[in-house]
Image 1 (cartoon, rainbow, N blue to C red):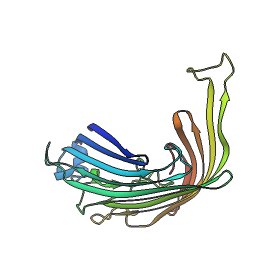
Image 2: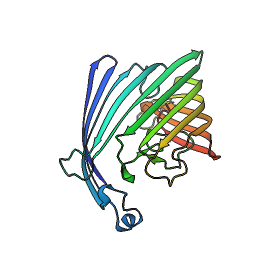
Image 3: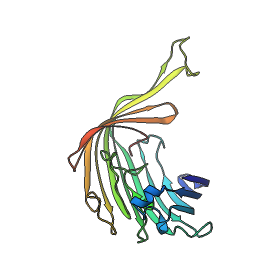
Image 4: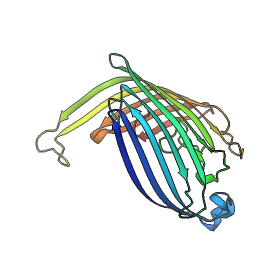
Length: 253
């Protein structure tokens, strides 16, 4: 899989942002993969070449992008996969919206919620191009080891958190500095969470978790440190009777 892209970021107002991204992709699968699923790529081919255009516009008043505690973010986006310029292998269109809300509810107490919906234009997308609710930034906690794909998905994530250790700076003793860092930055937050999601797949019904409401809940700790890095430690229970400990990077909402 080879991807090459160019991105243009816009900021027409204090809280208003936009993005335009052009991506070229070439993907090829093995003969054995094609034998297992001839519809893995578009056109029942063993390779696809495509040029895609993604655009979004969003309002963002969050007090911090890496780990917000106050503010809102509303984003609308479109994604045209296959412009018919490099090839006519792929011709798919996606669109969606997501909303994030953050609020302080007391001393050291915070709540956060987010809702996202993404849809395709009704095509029977090959497996590789289907929407995936268990990959990247699209997930509900506890389903990290699942693959749930379709032509639409809807999900929400909800947190109530308590500040265990406020953002702090600990100086390192002289002579013990490593990598030129003379202080350790850190903060810890305890989370109680509840998530829900639904993936629609109108064309295939082989996955028992498609076309079914899924839930998860649990507890976690967020560690916020250098370069706005967020490390998550979570224990989650799910509506399909699984549970376990999970480790991840990036803010949960």
